[in-house]
Image: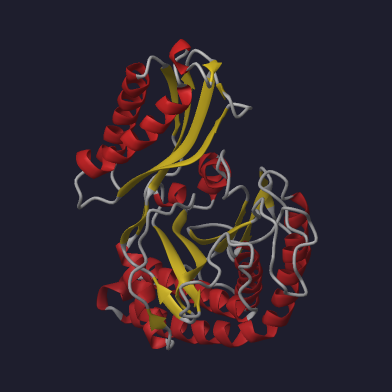
Length: 412
């Protein structure tokens, strides 16, 4: 609307706001209608990406496939990913993010477009997110986006170092003056066709820890001649579970999980070292600081009680993912008027590096349901997770509605 020289005067009596709302309503319906023409190609793109997945740090082939599908100039590369601006070259923009990477898991689904690569598969919905964002980008380019769109195709969501953190730290994003960052993620925990766009904290901060227990090796028949690292490691696992249970306010979500224990190479020997790896999840910075300190203290003191020593390394990961309240309310209204079913708010101790965006700019992560009501159906990261192609349309529609919800807020 910047081409209107009377914008300031008209805003005073509210007439421009009415015209803006009317124009956005018309453009939104135009975009939703136009989307249908782009969906068949988007579904085919989803199949190609799914069949040839790439792990984090090696997404160049996937990136190039998306660029061919977009068929638009102007991409700005950031590490293995890129951003593409649609609309005016200047002024504030609305960004929508998709992830490029797959998981190091062998796919077990029976879809004809299953992964052709051993131990690499799109089992978290990223193939759907990418295809949907390509369709949305093409739609907004066709209808002349009223607010510039920045399509963000980000690498390394599943691994550290995080692609989102690299994007936030790159000066390229600053140039685009992002006023709203949108993410949409498939979620089999809620019914197919339902949407969760809750305000506030929805995902936990996620940190990893590595523990190495040192002791004196000995034959299993003569344990008194050594310092048992396996026993010390077992005690450490038990002790860590008491941190959240007895030291963290039970009203605050937090969890410590040991996911891997490794040590020894024979049945009858006590090893000199045992390693443990795990994750810490929390919803507040104060709890995070408390847990880090307790993990260090408890691990070392527990090891010492068994005559051993221990090294502790904690790697800080994603911060808490917080949804902007204004964006959440705006999108919820859009979803209701477009006949989407609103699910109960989805909040968990799961994590997503989208949190790095939410820590720096108004952001909204939306969950799009794919569940069938069976609690035993494959979930995210399951070898058989392969939602049908209707999910491409669902995610694309939600992305469009979120874009227009943000546009209404920005232009008002």
